[in-house]
Image (cartoon, rainbow over all chains, first blue to last red; front, side, top):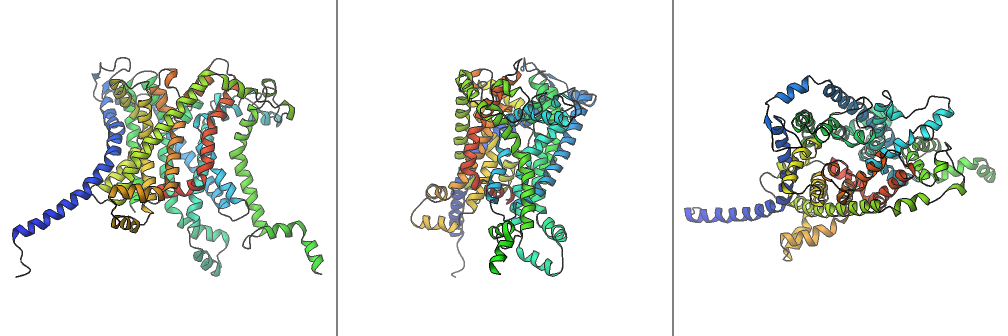
Length: 305
Length: 297
């Protein structure tokens, strides 16, 4: 019979297929190998190792001499008021900065999507704050709020309002840190939301207009739902980036004055590389890790849908 | 009648002619108004920075906002460029960012090509795995990373810094490149294979030439990330030999008496390369960021 094949023949065909499969996959694996190994050694291994270090009392001065303390670092952390302050500041900074970035970005996106002459120039220039080195941004803001000769204080003085070095002010340092995040990220939000708005089919708007929907209703019932996916992605990504951000706070205020702008990232860094308390720093880092992994899980869920 | 009509419409009429048909003058004015507020907020600080670097010390500390034209000077630039340590940081930054970009593009292209064109078990897990490494707390990662570099003798070396920067940039660069490769029709691959190209030839002769904008955007992203980084450099760099610009600028600022003319001018020179590269790639950047971040797996 033509349809029956001997075991040997069948095996031969499977072997052929398997060889082909191997050839395909072999090259695939080979191509991803460098990236996978690099990220494994430089990011994944240190992360796991960081969790391990958090169980030890270890100093940067003599890293070989580590003493196992179990959950001792975590017990110390729960009783540490500066940790809780940094925790609160991190959450507050992330919530306030990302909300403002989204709302302001939405406004800018609405303007940038209009086809007025010269709009291309506005679109391309807008991302400039996002590519600026953070140290340069920090220098600009510190210069702006210098007493006597900073632009902000010149204007405040002209208006008859009090002037001071605002980064050194316990009440105003935190809002300034928020302002820097917003200044930096609003354009990115605007460009992403604009791209998303442009992909909304024009026919939806025309249909709504025929049904008598005004501009506000069209924004509420067509634009907002249509850009919700991109909005969620942008918000989750920026929650992660902002929560993880170290240098904006560290370079501008160093966490001060009197810890009023301390966030978890700066606290970990200072504990590890200024106080040399590696184990304790790692335990605070693990708290960040848990929260960031939670946000990442949300992000992955969004990307999969 | 017709002539009076044109005259009567005047400035507003000419403004209307200039706009396209769908946009009314009132709408356009509102848009320009909104844009003026936003761009004032975004660009005035940068303009004030640049203006300040052109002032002499006396004018800078005088509390005036607008200096007279004859008070402008390039002396600050001459001062900064004459400082050997600043030139050194500039060279170091260039070396580190260039090496990081080269390494990231090579690794990212290979991985992006595999993820775009090959079917193998674990492919989608790998892609999400890569992107997840971007979300880990860097301050935590750096503690064991520093100990690892210490054991390998790579503290205070360009190698250590470049490895750290590559790890920062690689996940998103790979993702972006994969997005660009996905946009190239696979029928082109097949045609090339019919002509006798191997898989590697396809990458070299078909994919790479067609994804030049993607390469430019991913390269730009990586270069800027490395050029701007303070965190990894501050941990790994111990001497002036490996110090890059952000770290050097921070040192200029923490000296007892801040010389603002020097600090501001150094800041402007630091941002110049980034701005120039931005000007080159900006037309692809918007699209590239939208592609990489939004399209999903």
